[in-house]
Length: 228
Image (cartoon, rainbow, N blue to C red; front, side, top):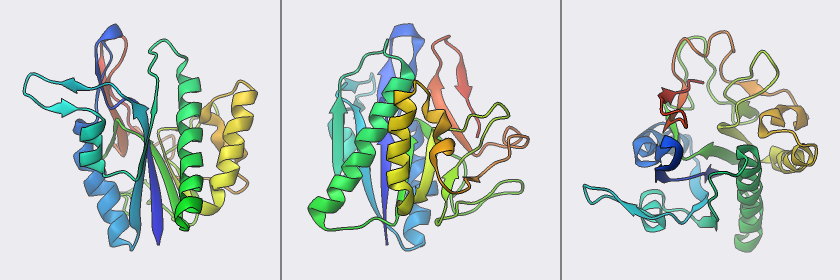
């Protein structure tokens, strides 16, 4: 069995608008709570990344670059775009996701493989427990379904983490195209999947514990971990 994990976004940034992100702060949780459980469940893991070429070496000599991503994630493919901090973030999300999912499909063709699962997440997502387990009031991932962290009371769903059976990939890609053409957002993907969504947290309960969080500094200069 095989899973394609699609990671997207800026891997390191510290600058304009006091915006900060650092993939090394989430890497350990990704390996411990995503990669290891999937491998333990019998899945071979291939990683796809859509990001930008923005190399940086910090004061401690730690390198953040496409090379460090290759060393830390060992991806089968990296797509590199042009970074523009002023670009509308929903358009960025659409571009990353469509690029990644099309890369998965092309990789299947080029290498005569077929994935069983597809996962997508941001590079700044931190995982709080193994995806194949869950504490009380949460659901563990169902590998036969389309899994999303949660939905809100006003009709949006989380777009930072999805994991779904490969059979949903075409619906997902077509849904992203339709949503973008209708000037909607990636937070409406649940409206484009033809079977019930498996939500991992009820909107009433998700803030009581931390399931998945974003590790970054917001543009208003406040650190936050947004819990899902």
